[in-house]
Image (cartoon, rainbow, N blue to C red; front, side, top):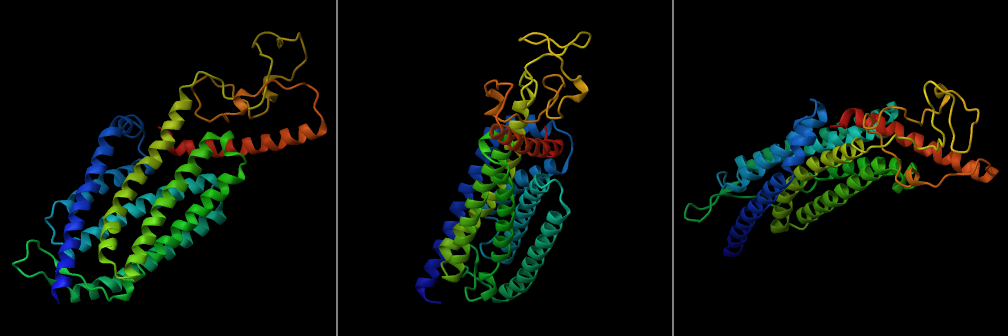
Length: 358
């Protein structure tokens, strides 16, 4: 090894240490600034799979970044490489399971979608296991320790292992599938501004995918171009980004659910201009009329006490002006389509919030 290669290894080692400290600081800052929300929406909630996934994303992620930043593990040596692999695998499994639960709720627990997700998830795990199972033993055999007089402890990492260039491809493929399923279903409900919960699912899922996809592409390109510095930085930050995303995907949903839970209103999305009295005939602001009994009111109308439900009322429709009693055929058609879209949204809201509500 020439002097230039040795200097490059020292730069990469120093760069990894700096970015490990920076990513750890970022995660700790996020923990401190959102800890009150975590106590309210997570710690005080019932035990559930999403709650446990949150703890894995939050605290295993922080522990992993602090371990790498501590400098106790020699850089690019077997101990450090295995620790990075374990922490990254925990982050990926946690957030992918969380996204799969979201998609399962969006598609109404469809058997076809569950089968597709199960097969794709199995292929991802099997591919990653095979690639890493072949990659790491070969890599460990080719590792050589730094000279003892160097200022840092570590090993020379081989750059000519082809399998190292393929390790991100299975993950990229599965993440793309999750994004496409989430985006397609959210968009199918119509204008996202009408359904706050669906909008939040689409926004958070898209933001997560764009950021993670970009980092994984950088890692893949860096491997193919043998850019050790870029690969080192991206590999450090991807674990931190996954930890942050796994926490905020859950907090975001629970915050919007709790906000609507405390609104002092009856949750309806169709206009009922008249008020029923339990012991008297219906009373209308326009005079007495004959109306169907409360049992025949459409299921979209919630007669529960305010605050009991956490379904989300579409933002536009909750402030819609009163409609005339007579409608044209075209307006009835539009209204029918809109009600179908809202009904689908409510069914998703109910299924989703049963599992994720605080």
